Image (tube, rainbow, N blue to C red):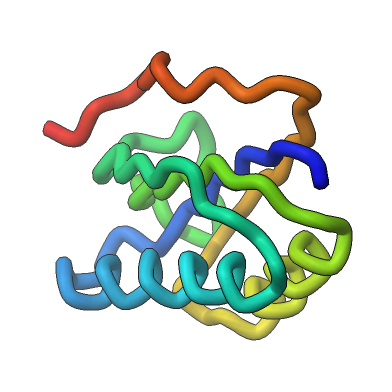
Length: 106
């Protein structure tokens, strides 16, 4: 198993409940597909450098987890059909830094 970071940008007009549901949904997806969530960071509402699908801001949610290739496939499949996610990025690491938190929720 390898270490991954997955950052999701959700629509700016989602409520706190919707954001919480989104976090729980992808947390469960990782756990159910033989992955292990190490850390979840909610960075909050951040301005985008450029518009994405007519949105100027987005809620950033950052997952640090350990998983297999099947875990990544499952996450990508769920994101494709999720209407509340406007962009995502998954990065693979050999070692994962869990102490550094680049953005903190205000």
